[in-house]
Length: 120
Image (cartoon, rainbow, N blue to C red; front, side, top):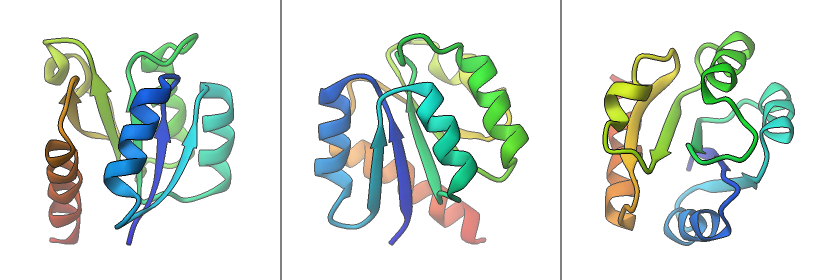
């Protein structure tokens, strides 16, 4: 059972992630960047899931701040852009991107890939 922080301003994304993942993982949800950064500084999550449409947040700066606090924090980006991988994967800490809309199965597979990779 992993501790996962879901950061999204979209209630549907939050609800869907919780519905799909809460049976297996411990989840916390936050809907703004400022609170998320404070929470990440205070707690060591096994995984952070970030929606790329977080209002009022420059993602490049957000990723940099997370990486400065804890370079080992793995990030999964949920993205509505077609060029998801190329846009985000170059930032430190991001292990993968998942294009929206996504299925519960795809979300579970991405998270499973990370935990398999990190245990090797």
